[in-house]
Length: 435
Image 1 (cartoon, rainbow, N blue to C red):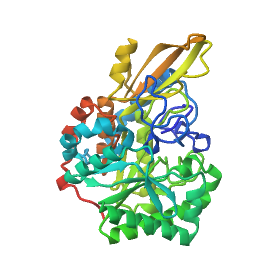
Image 2 (cartoon, helix red, strand yellow):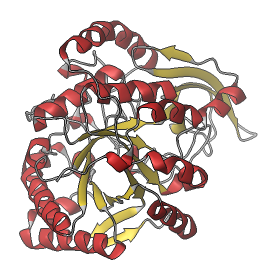
Image 3 (cartoon, one colour):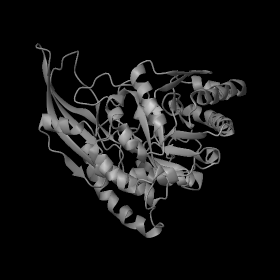
């Protein structure tokens, strides 16, 4: 969910720098308002997103290719046999419900937890439906989810301005009121659990606030876990990656204390994607994903409650411009999904290149933009994860004995992804919820 300048993934210096982050993950985005040659995965330009250092995509891919071989060979020599299958969770963002609803009944039988993604925390005791969400579509999806075998675990996003949630959690009284509001929300909706996706700490509040926010966030999670578990409900927390158990500039997003919360939560979803956001590059290169997994295990002491996020999307960046582009209507960075990318490839007559070390695909094409008066030609570069890339990341989760994987997101997926997912997904009926 970020955009780094790239040494070699797998080493601490290769990981996205929290201090330089300028955008957050698609797992807490609203709909993209400029779907030019891209699917609406999230608000690419304005929503807070995971931020990383700058990279040049093609050069980064070649560097990654040279870096990955030794790590991939040695990994299998030091780990126990991988799990034969693994539980599958999934987010369901409101802006992709048109696509996901038609397939949900068929695919939900393979899911352990499904997280409707349209609930926003906007105050101490206010949790509301995103104003851009369709009431008809969200109600239809929720009805289908309740009829399915999957646990319904809505995500709640911190939709407040920078610093506001941190201020709420810093005061024991307002923190308690916020906990009560979430517990009441879960009870009123009769949900199986709650997924907390509070990313403003990392991507809006500033690195200088982390030391103060970190213990308050832990206290919040502890109190919320007690309230939800007391009602027989689960608590999942979705957080960006850490790379070790320290608090250095190379430690990742250490405002989130994995180790302090692991005994209280039921699952921790590692948002191991958005490696490149501001500049072109891979979405979730395999060596970096492995670094995120190892960092989470080091911080928590065990893989037992860790769930690996799987990106079924990509991004589309302008890399060069010839001519004068119109002041209005010239596309910047947009998103693509596994579902939409083949149509883009065909329409632009592009030639995708597979980058084995990153487990992703990339291609370039030219786009003419004109308003009848001024004209420019953009060179655009696309990186994306396909079904085989999803399988490779599931294999990592299995090799590291993680508790599951979580697909970001329903509606971004295509049939090829499910061909790869289904053979190694655990039957949700025999999966257990840790307490």
